Image (cartoon, rainbow, N blue to C red; front, side):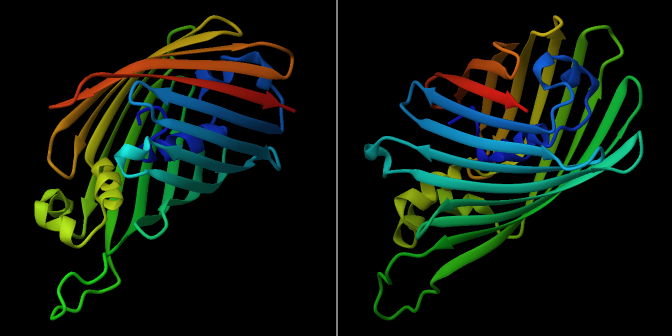
Length: 293
């Protein structure tokens, strides 16, 4: 499902942690001076996938922000009952007026099939118009094996491998009321994930584990243009992902509209379409409600 995928959790956590992007701080006036932000989102798509998310961000001081994220995703039963849970925790620290960083942890997966523990970091430098962010990360992935299909072969209970990622994001806000953003991320796996696309893998792993592993990426790039209209903002995102499983590309375009609906609440609506080789275009929509205190 496109709107809140595992590959984008770190991006969501950084938003929850309140990284000081000038244009983002300007859009949506409800959050000015707030020390606590609560986030809830619900996403659905044309394939009947569903995603629910709860998040929180707490500014414990002028320089330190803690964040929390809980997420539940589900797909129809005829797609091997794909239900996953995500738990994320993070801390963001502003070291100086122009330098800051953060550390984040994420636990994701479906027990008995596939699980992962991820550790992400970011280090960002900002000026009046530019922000440059480096995004290193490490993820330990565990796939549980099926019951031994061959009496004479002893299988391990699980197979583990690592995903070492490195990302770079650049933001520019030099034009009044505009934000331009570009990011790219590369993944380096200690085992070749493409073996999970072979038919023989069905002998050793469940259909759920193999289907969920289809989301592993070799690299991704995202481009964003945002216009601030005072308390309201409108943005367009374009994302290109390459699968680490079969090497195919997926393309996603969405529109993101955010506006305050009261003194303490902002509403965000994201709608778009994603498509990949040999699969139909899939539309999606996300409703997000943000509370400030």
